[in-house]
Amino acid sequence: MHGSVPPSATPSNTVIAYEPVWAIGTGLTPTAADVAEAVRPFGSGYVATFADAFTPGATVDVADRDRQTILSLLSPIPVAQDELLRQSDLTPAALHLVLLELELAGRLVRHAGGRVALD
Image (cartoon, rainbow, N blue to C red; front, top):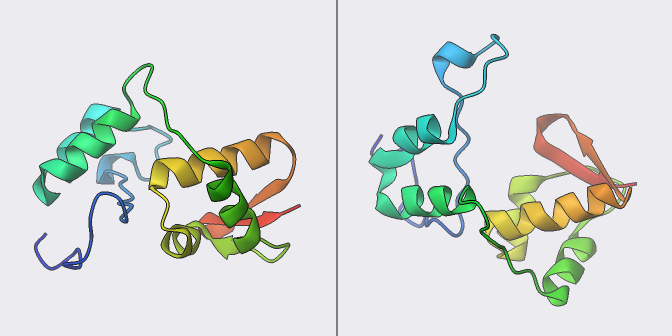
C-alpha cells in the first residue's frame, strides 16, 4: 500500500473509501471492524480516527462559520464531496455532519459519484 497515499495525507484531510471484494455486488455491508482492519496498514492515526467516528456517544463539533463555508462552496451544480473537503479544510466528520444537516433540511441533493448540490 505504500505509494497509494500521498505523503501529505493525514487523518484530518484524507478519506479512504473501502469496499471489500467479497461485498461488491452482494448487497452485504462490512462492519466497522472490517473497515478498521483494512485501513490499519495506513497507520494508527487513521484507525484511531475511524474508530472514534463510530464510538457510541461520540460528538462532532461544527462551528457556524464552518457551516457558512460549506454553504459558500455549494451551488445547484453538483460538486464532489472530496472537493468540498479539500476546499473547506474541515475534517471528514464535520463535512458529513454539515451535509447531513442540509439534507435533512431539504436543502441538499445527492448525485452519483459522491457529488452533492443545493436544492
